[in-house]
Length: 317
Image 1 (cartoon, rainbow, N blue to C red):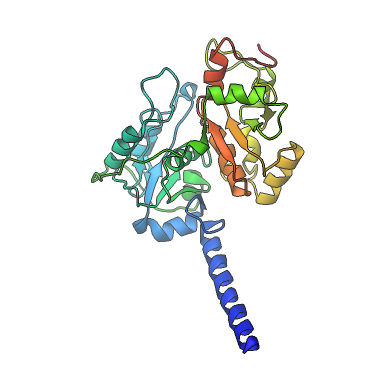
Image 2: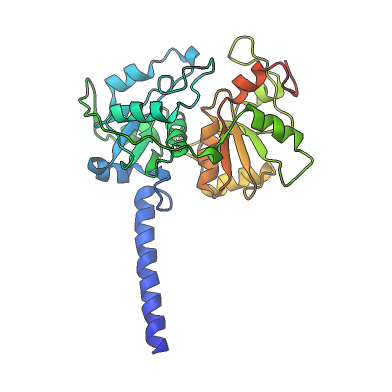
């Protein structure tokens, strides 16, 4: 009897592992809604998911993300305007909107809280991560990122469309906020003061280019000093992007090696920051991919922090 049960369990585990392997092949990572998904899987499941174009470009890039979406997008994709679906009551770029505002805006895009949302952008792995993180903040369970984004999709000569799109609005239930995924200015200041207490201190990673972190290069936003927060660690966002594809994340072993080289502990809390809360979410996604669990994003990031005259800044220029 024991032999029969053992063989049964072995066979059952084998079937489960085979299923996981198959799902991993299509998803490009372990089976999980909150993950990266592969172009193959998206192509085979477009009728059961909602694709969302989360493209955004720096103001000085001379690129119009919505116009590009209108001219070339994935089939039936909706456009998530990062500079539109935000908190418009404060003078900071694309801060998180209120739950009701998020629900109203996303509902108008024809998305409900039960839909599986797959976000992509026109660069590959860039602003789509911000949209992904935003959905996660509002506890949307089924949300993924298309690894490689539109560049990989186009390189594989997959179906695209252009022009107007007919979207039937849905009701999106007003969500709650997962506060564990967000940090604010007061949190950051308290964390700096907690440096001497290992139990309370959270590692802060800065995704800006290293020359802005050190203060050698100026910030792109006029009047904002460069430099960095005390005790923060420089991890430029492009360091987690595969240098060969330029549009996908590095392999897990490469990301793990990068983390080790920076003396980052994945088992302890990590806060991601950048210029205005966009590229910090690239690090969020990369670290999540290799198993980090205690991750949060400083929503106001350097724009908010450096705008406050009382903020301590290392290498200020």
